[in-house]
Image (tube, rainbow, N blue to C red; front, side):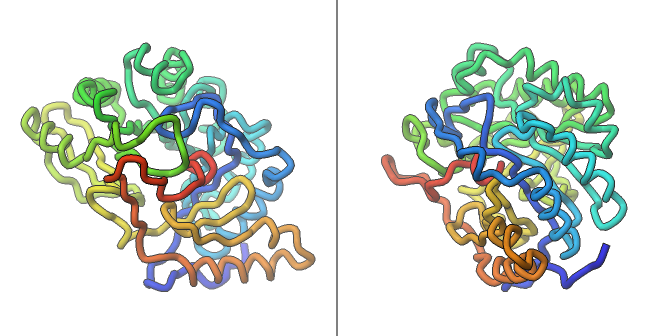
Length: 334
């Protein structure tokens, strides 16, 4: 594959990680993520699988070595495995890792195919092991399918990392049990602070749980030994000595991590957001569909590097405040 100049932003950060949304649609309706009556994008606005593939090749040519397929829920996209297999053929040829973030409701059906295509790791969103709480949070009674999907992924040979949004007065008291279960199953688990993106039913401040408080509580129960390793994302990891497992913390609100940002996000409609918490964007769909897509894409990616901000400015301290950005996480790509 022909290589071009690497992607480097105005703060000399090398961009090597693309989070590519293949759909904004999801078969769950998690209360902290979207309203019950979510309005999804018209299908005609979403990039075709061929366009998503061409876009990915453009990023690989500019030095992106890791691609994470996201959504919404990526596995609800029709024929998604065609894209996975096509990208998998570039592993070892510019692409070092191809992975996926999923709610796991469809994972049992696809786990073997994902592994066969070259995928070796998936992230699964799992906020609770209590079926009633799962139904309350996701507005769908789907916990059995999720657990089946996690088991299928492990059986297929996929390494599973679980992600849990920490929510005050909801799953707060369950966090230690969730950690013990995850580590007992051989899975790492990462806790995430709720992010103020998009309007939801209710006020996120009611359930905002600072992970600094959670960590302090966990340290009274267990020995948490800091780890220097990273998976290329914002999580900071510790080893829970008593369980032997790995625990991560993603803290966009209590401890900004932007100085080492190595990623960009592209929506299913081809809008590139250099920062999850920023409104800056570049239209890649227009570039792809222009008379000279290669040159236009090159120019668009250069512009994205120029406008990428130094950091986000999330704030969840005021009741009734507007979200940091009007778009939902499912639109940007989780």
